[in-house]
Length: 254
Image 1 (tube, rainbow, N blue to C red):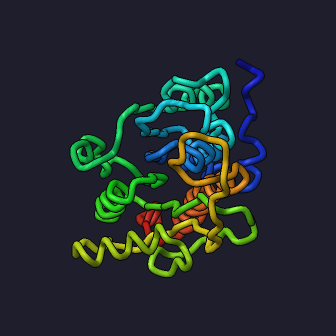
Image 2 (cartoon, rainbow, N blue to C red):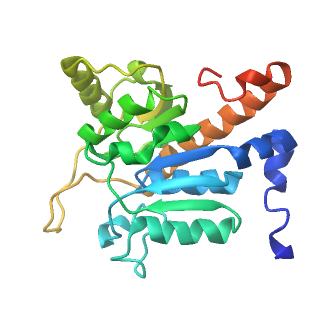
């Protein structure tokens, strides 16, 4: 195993030893490991996250191959979380990866024990399930980061980060805000979102299945890596704050 020693040296040079210790100690749960979530998981593990739970009920299909990390012609039909876990452990063999081949929804939500985590990543597609996760996550101590819609985008320079209520030009964010207001279930605290205000149209194709919108790997990848980057940045900032105020180490407001 000598060959794996030092795999995080370049990371430590930027965030320091205390930062690496924090990266190894925090607990992260990621909901949805598709085009956005799979790249987020890779970014987290390559940065030194050691405790990661990945949640997704889907299996790999051919249409995933153009944009999802673990989707290849050899993994079609296999649970996404199982294939992704194997890859993540090849990157960081000592990591603890909990792969849950389940759906997050009203019936299962309580089984995920969100209070056990320091960071929660929302990369869910379903508006109903996404809204539920956001409302539950913002009632915990954890820091929530969320992906808005990554489909029908092509221009990487239009990808941005903003607090949820300040996201502009994103139909998914608009639908979520409308749902929250209608149901009177406003998230309890602010959270950062990755989004793009670009909105293209689907083009005619020869495909017989017309479900789903067009999407590209460079967009979903940037969305996913940006989510991971927000967590890495928050950990780094929190560690620096801890030097002066240890009790604030993982404050969601950091």
